[in-house]
Image (cartoon, rainbow, N blue to C red; front, side, top):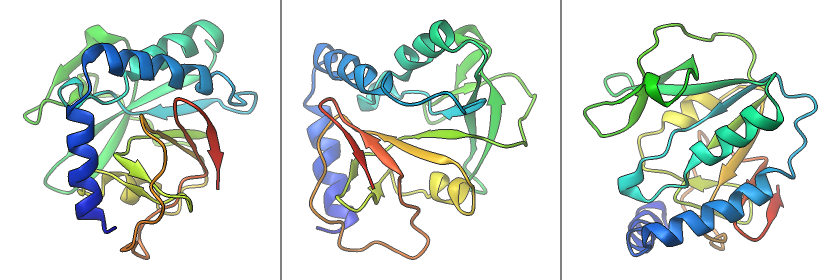
Length: 186
């Protein structure tokens, strides 16, 4: 299937989930997340969930990191919809976040991180057996990850699709993807 078809299919599939189902799936994602090797991770970038789109509740992962790996610096993105680029800001807590015009939580803090990032937790709607992903179609993460030497970890509420038929040379592959039942390496 092509990206547009997958995007439509997976958006509908996510919308059909109840809040309790999203919570249960996220708890299982957290179990997989705790199995990652954080020994070399000093800086980790993680997306913030859009609850209205039934995205995984990454605040659960952030809380686990703060408890179990307090030395890791956590970054969260702020999107510029005019340029389709993101800036990366230290996570200061939920009280430092506000929703933008697109209902996406973003940090109010102006301080930006421009240094090395060891791991990026990547949002997605779907992924395939090769490690390609389908997002919302704006290319924010492909631009951010292009040429970046980091571990790219997808979070998916569902298992993989077979193949994304219309991958592009600018599509950045994941290194691994976590689902509620497994950790897939590519």
